[in-house]
Image 1 (cartoon, rainbow, N blue to C red):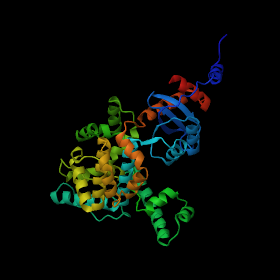
Image 2: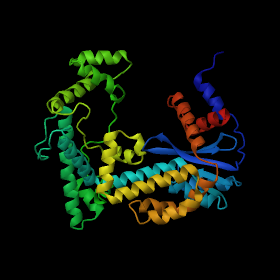
Image 3: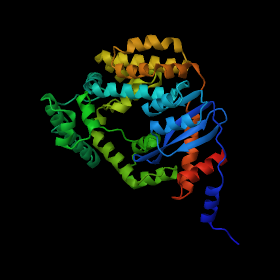
Amino acid sequence: MPTSRDTLLRLVRRRPAEPIVTPRVIGVDDWAWRRGHRYGTILVDLEQRRIVDLLPDREADSFAAWLREHPGVEVIARDRGAGFADGGRRGAPDAVHVADRWHLLENCSAALLDVVRRHQPRLREAATQMREENAASGAEPPLTNASPAKPPPMTCAQKRQWEGWQRRLQRHQAVMEQHRRGVPIKQICRDLAISRKLVRRWVRGGIPELQRPRLDSLEAHREFLESRWAEGCRNVARLWRELRETGWRGSQRVVGEWAARQRLAMPARRTCHPAKAPFAIPSVRRTARMLASKLEKLAPSERRFIGQLLAASPQIAKARNLALRFAAIVRAHAADQLQPWLVEAKDSQLGSFALGLEQDAAAVHAALTLPWSSGQVEGQITRLKLIKRQTYGRAKLDLLRARLRKAA
């Protein structure tokens, strides 16, 4: 007699669970039941490379209770979130906590990004200086005194972006006006219907960006498009069909927007040196990425921009130097250099990041001296998500626990 899929799932659920053997080294992280709404916790035995258990939430109390029920954990590898740190200390007071090295680097990059956000006017000064130098050398036409109210010719997409930037500037001015009058952040959020995170970012020095971070699907094919454009091909449909033959899967509208930008830039390019294109102000995220990279890996125009930016802002220069040194400390596992770095970083734009590291100093020091990390946990989360999606809505906690623990 054939067995239905529901019957098989019931058999899996009813199968007696194998007893949990408490691991010596455990990795812990959260995973999303539904991103932004509900999360669970995964526990991984880093020595045996297998999933130990799943918890229905990511609360510190749940993690602490699990550790009390399974004594014997000696090492806990985790990210720098406060929940698992607190739960680990309460549930296994004698365990050694190890902060994940990838998360340390990611937190440092986020701190550098915040520094760039607080100094956005310096980005414009550096880009303006570059344009003036290019204009003096004949590489670009001289800058005009165009005001934000009278933007240069734009495509339809660029006009929408410009109008949205103008609206964000007006909201930013309203927020700063209330902040100067001493209005609390919570009241500003209520009056202007803006999230607390955005208001806090603006109050701390952030400024709305004209160019928001956006993925460019044409980036890998830009050389091909520019060569065909230089050969005289101006037909958008033809360019799109040729791109499709190379394996690109984007829409014709994307190519049309690129062609419109090329046509608007053509009058300016007739007076430009053929080897140099006009330099646009990079976004905050792109600038932070350039600051975190080695200068020899950047394009010549990017190196000049970073040089101008570092000369215009000593604060950014010091933050960049500290961020690169911290990345080198983490990659080289140089635990003896961490404390001097913290002392120096406290008096810089990375002071908040350094204070957070100092509060979790034991786990950060263990990350530089012990071999454990959360990389294996991330891989197990990927497998968990794959199995969860394969169940087509039947992925309750008991079924996921049965399948993953058995598969391990």
